[in-house]
Amino acid sequence: LTRMTMAAGTRLRLMSAGIALTSGASLALSLLFSRLFSVTMYYHFAFFIVSLALLGIAIGGVAVYVLPKVFRPSRLLPMAGVVAALVAPLTLFAVDVAVSNPMSVALEGDNVGRLLEIYFATALPFFASGLAVTLVMSAAKSDIGRIYAFDLGGAALGCLAIIPLIASVGGPGALAIAGAISAVGGVFLCLAGRD
Image (cartoon, rainbow, N blue to C red; front, side):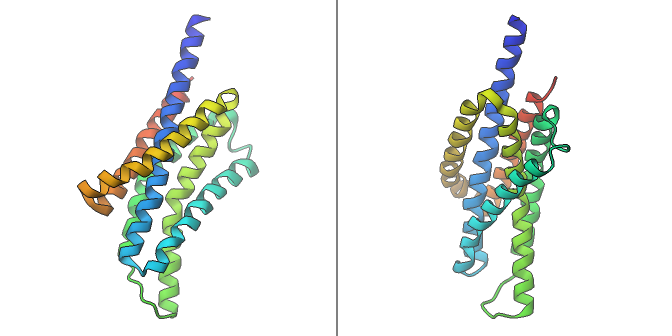
């Protein structure tokens, strides 16, 4: 009984750390992409990142609800870990697409196509982080209060962390670090999902 209690405590600590890192990275990415878009595109395009973050989180939640056979309870945490780790390469892909597609204010076919390409490429890391958070929340069951507290705390720290991060490594470097932080959170979630 004591060994089972210790194992449950370790699992809860790993889940808490994993969701804090993943949600912190997600909020940091949202703010950092807003900054990147305000530099690479016209300022009024910078705010569409909010819709991307909401879209990604919403699609992640809907996917878990609509596909219960895919997201079975025994696989929730390992899947959350893998998806959280995917945020890192998806972030690098989104940055590459965003900086290699120059925008102008003209409403032309090329411009609309570039904007759609940037929009969907940038939505991918938010979909992955939203899916990871939804999977962890689904796996939390009776510990949902603690997990949600770590989710909110991690998100707050992610917002604060971008200030020194941008100052020390710049915008693109900060985006890469935020993606890497989500990957570390994914490792914690995979460890929490071990039997």
